[in-house]
Amino acid sequence: MGTFAEAGLSECARANMDCMPGFGTFLFLFLLTLFTIGMALAISMSATLAIVLARPGVLRGALWFVAVWTAPLLGAGAWFLSERRRAAGSLRGESGGEPPPDNLTTTVG
Image (cartoon, rainbow, N blue to C red; front, side, top):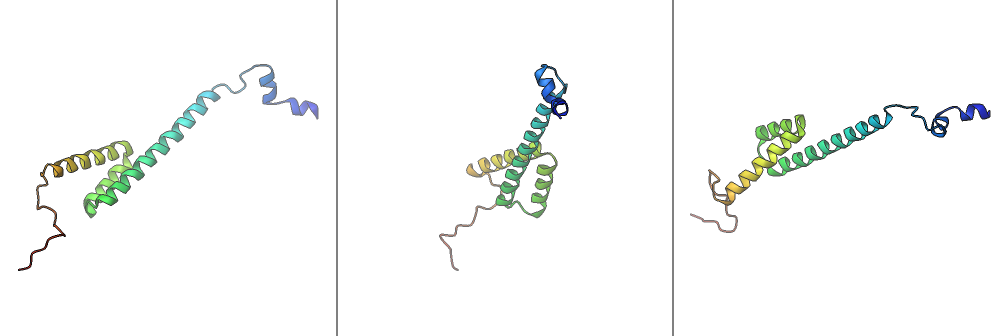
């Protein structure tokens, strides 16, 4: 029984041998892949939430969803950049349309 217990990776460790060449590289690439997928999901979810909260309209929103979920970094980056430009333009008064309705004062007549 002792012979079978000693056969395995413990023998490699005791002899200071590399019994699994390339395992360190595999483990690093595997963890890097998991991290990248996790970040892509987090960025896509964040952009999706921002799109829903911005209420861009059905067609425009659907196009942004497709962009964000097919190319997470590029799509989300483009969304946040366009929203930042739109917000900066609306702060300068460059909305291009009617001003938002004022709910505090209404005119009757």
